[in-house]
Length: 301
Image (cartoon, rainbow, N blue to C red):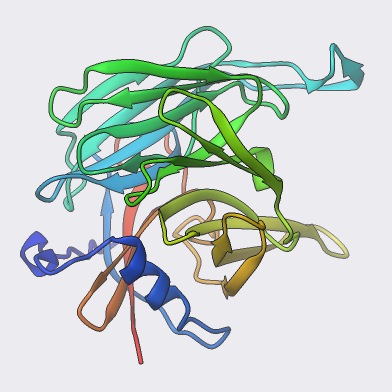
């Protein structure tokens, strides 16, 4: 397989602010064409990638769950849970546009081993880590992006699958399992707002920016079809935080090397002039080189 590489020097004008990303996403339609401009393997075991964000310089941070024992569905709920907790380890890797490992730290404890969508607010990384089942428990961590020192920010009695910090208000906005609820917290964990997600087409896995009363989220839903196989629908949406309503959304059908929609899990969005750029890591990989960092671009009107 040939390896496409995108020079970090071409990212000098990139902007991942909420205003820039929201404006760009509002231009997406069902007919938007995306081009894969970069495709490089991670030179570390990426396991089950969940979130990507970028920090200072050209560093990217990837949260990922290493599953050592898969969850198993119960025949009927046990203590309110629909499945066993499974076992695993949570990780945050530092990488670059070439897929090199620049650093690594473990997150989580016990059954709380599944990191979700992450965010960098200009000073700290925010990493939610939860049990791998709905209605469970989470720890939200704040990480130093340079030293990777881990600080527990707060705990919450539900599965937090993704989090983003509002650059204007300083509040944290989060999604639960399947993004069925949208939550707002202070940085010390006080829940200030919650609302049901009004859209049911796509389960948003991670949110990539927030501000001005909106956040941008990406994700996927899988639908059964006659015969073997499933239909996977990816999506990108502008979400109104107060009401939980989708103000603009567009489907995503571009596939990864393993055949997954590229918004399956870890995504980061940014603009660069008249281009909307996406970093994505949709595919799992238990060995170095198995999972890849994809860079996609679409030119805006």
